[in-house]
Length: 96
Image (cartoon, rainbow, N blue to C red; front, side):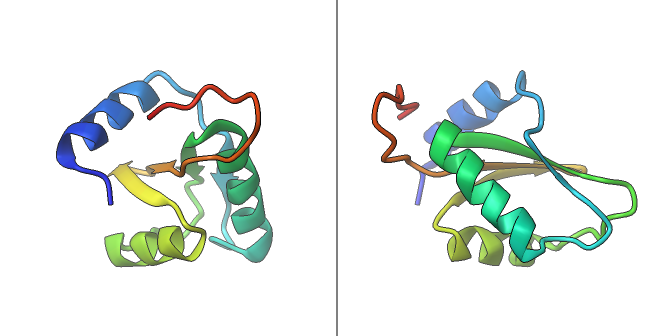
């Protein structure tokens, strides 16, 4: 679990990022979850964008999804979701 100060730092870093995963009308399918896991492995901090036709998940559902893939839900702003997970990728400059 990340503390408030770290959460603020991560949210600030993500504010200038472009989304790397887009969730469509089918929601968080297995393929979308695999893509999220891959992006977290490569980048640690990612932004996800929900399409207009996508069902809007609750905070509980998002937290549950994040726990399932071993990530931390940093923030949700409208249809944007920010996730963080420490990566074991070699040669990656770690955020935290």
